[in-house]
Length: 609
Image: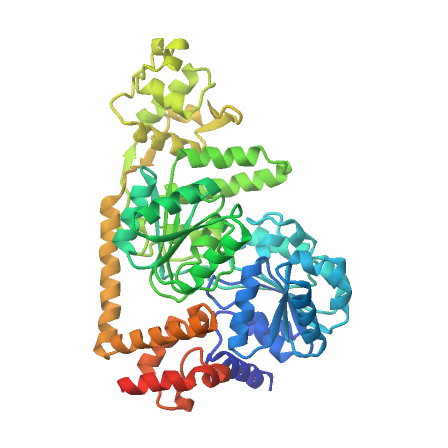
């Protein structure tokens, strides 16, 4: 009986024929009254795991969500499916808030979205105590954990909800949490004997590419032109100033690019978020303030111009590409200054030593992914405790394996220079000594008199930066003083200096050949996909349906993917439904969407049939 009702909700409301990943088991765990933690990849359908129980159960479901824009998108999306939902947050006026509360009290609402700050406020506490809560869902649950990569103070207080609603099941959802973080989330939320479900972390449609930074704007431009000249994408930068610079540079190069960061006014952020939702071929340049929980399915690339501080952050951000399952790219460039900057930011925080220790480990793992000579995807999966194939055939390391070289002598040169300069100088000075620079700082300190002066003048600065960064990553050298960023030797240094160990490092270059080789693979995939569509005469119909969808979305002031995503349009092209009952066979078409859009889409399809 339960199964029949769940499948009925899935099909009649949301237009899907079957559950994905662990959705079915997660939903049944909730309906059995059990606290549940769900780890599912971005685009894996996490929202349905609480939306379907919300419609099945009596009472209302509270969803704790971190961002106002995300709440608004979710409510708009549910409205299109015919599900009554509201949000309560600081963006509302007093009258808007009172109107939403009246709807809730009248029993017209099934799902309420609220921020962690809001649900814990005295103002709303009494209200929620009297409305018959049947389920509490905590989205982006990695924010709960003290080990989490998006540490947010009010998330850590959400365990108080178990005291207020002791008999209400709690579901926590996230795309990224290693084993230690999962345990911490369940403890922080005071979950009782929780059921934990972990779906695969693999995103097979995402191609991973990581390069050394040389000229970031030139490299980014080359990447976009080669791989995604007409696509929507996100470019992540570490600072607000850099976001502005990169957005301006891309605009000058002819791209439709807008900035997004916390320093913009609320109106500017809202406007640029809206542009991202409705415009085609748009690029958002942003800090990590942008993107959590975004639903746009056709983001074709995510680019990082700075090193993320952890693999969790990297996976979360790159996961915003290709939510529709189509080929997409996660592209990143990084350099030695990233390592130093992130390490310095960590060491100068007020966090306790235990937190810093974990954060250092996470940064080391992120660096190891960058420097790895083996498959990127295999490394990512192993980090999250999942064993995959040794090679994926769809990352830069697999497409064109890196060259390894014997770096023992060059490593000895760097270590000797660090030692001869009393372990008191940063990377720039060490490289200047090795390359025989004649700048004033060298001569003032008489470092031009050292035996190591000029011993590496035959190699360019980029070469020595690469060796230094890899030695740091492998802990053969370390940053000894964070204020001056001075380098020092470690216990492992002797293995290299005495010649007991032969050191092989990854050869670094701009990887132009790698980019072009990967681009050839993209073209083969795209032409194969387009060839299959053309064989069925679908190109013109798809474009007509896309134009119709975009026009309807603008009329209703909705993101186009909320009306129908591309997967639904492709399904219409394949099925070519002739009537209402056949239109219900289309992926993502439930009863409400049939009533709202069926006639106009059927008319367009019939013209082509």
